[in-house]
Image 1: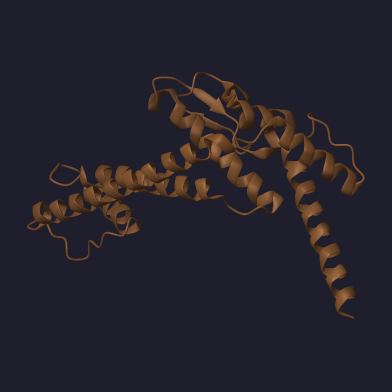
Image 2: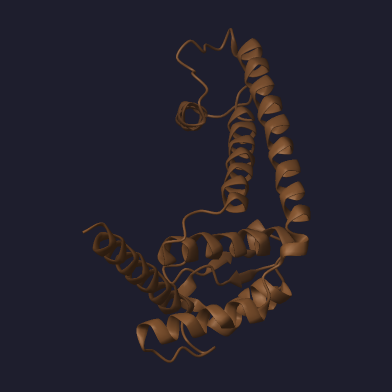
Length: 222
């Protein structure tokens, strides 16, 4: 990933090269409305033709950062998606690492493979060339287990998406929220405002509202 937050896929790693926006500072409030309300993924594309998986990943990355910056916390959908990506990453890493055993790779490469397996939770301290075959079988069983769990998380994600289909956030919902925050903080927030800055305003408004509520409760109890 580039330092400016854009995700760049090299030509040698993909049939197509593309660059995506993955940071709130790269989007405007208007872009966010189009992404959330209209499923307009074009607002994420800097160049190229990314696949849907890459677009979904970029979208969830932005949603996660927006939740953190605005103090909203992580949504259930984001948490499930993170689990899916964790399982997918582990499966890819483990199968790639296992592919070096039984081949004519040097010890340095095999040491890297061992390190990858350990990072994915597979202990390799007792592995030896004589036991590689049975060790690999056990590791592949772990991969199958992760695949089952990943499918389970995907089912949860799809069910949640279907359940929320009728509760989709509308542009009016967001604009009403912007109007409330603008009045509460004496600001004028437009669709051209940086999404990162708007998230900061949202967090500030939340803290101000909580402080006012706490003050009101304190005065009632006195």
